[in-house]
Image 1 (cartoon, helix red, strand yellow):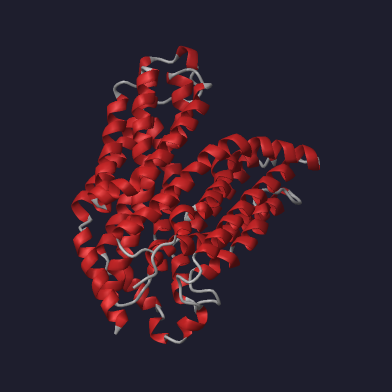
Image 2 (cartoon, rainbow, N blue to C red):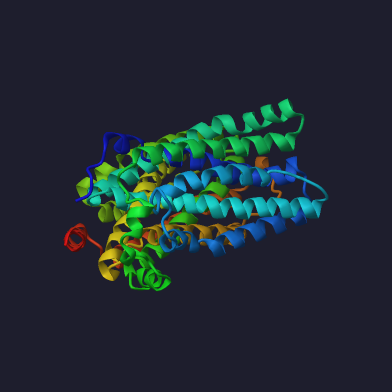
Length: 457
């Protein structure tokens, strides 16, 4: 039997994700602004940087878990070792993503290199971190609990980041006498917070994973490339999750990109947008926190399906009242609550799938399976750059329209992009989970019992 979860793990697992999310938020919210307004790259170069980095990142997304699963475990274990090996390199490399050194072509190449290399290493660390969930937990309820703690800490980062990121960039820029350097320092500082968080996780999980020396004594446990392929293609539950996750991520990405249009053309009050971001972040924290209770009462599978349908219904329903700003806030915050729940339960689903994978193949390829979460995310990142302009155009949006003279048709178009189209994506995701994901709690309990019985022999 595995060791019982310690109080520290139950409380602090996810603190590494707080720092990780703070770090990635610099890119999500400020990278394009940095390139255009701070470093002042030309727009064609900005487009090239964005395309090259996002495509390479998406292409590499399936390999991170494979690296962890396939490599010989390092001194402190297959997963835990990466929590201290990866972060220091990320701190240095990530800062180069926010530089402008030399002529523009050279500077662009440095930015691309900083982006690609930092992402390779931080994704390995991230996969190692989430792969601890099936390693630590004894049952689906504990996997849901750890996923909930991770989701809560991740959601908290949105509140902290909104207050400190840009002011810190301006402050450090003034201190060092360079606006560009100010962003470099902020990127490094946020990456350092990730490093500290992962050190905490490394410390509190001591004794829960076999060391490199212990793993070397059981060579049969080695996972080959063929084992990884079996873990993917003999795992219908994983393939269903990946497809459903793609549509869920598209829901989130389109809403993020379209929010400014709503407050500009419908509410016609951009001062409300910071309030929306704050209340949305708080609501997602609440959703993530209650997700483990919900999963315990309904099972993780049922909680995920119900919440995805809830997200879809709340977004589609809000479309019909969105001209009223108060009703809009009520509806969209309900949607954000469901998004907070899903940020936790979906990670727990991947943890459950890794148990099925081990039962099916006889090999523990949890890092590879958990790492596949990146695939749906990265494909959605690439797709959003195409889908959002198409969605705006199809909805009738006209660039440069004067907000003060916005017609009902224009407002409706923006509402459709912000609410209706994401709602349809969420509905598709919910149907995929309902019809395709058949891994129940009862089946999982049986699979885990068989795995434990084999290991005890």
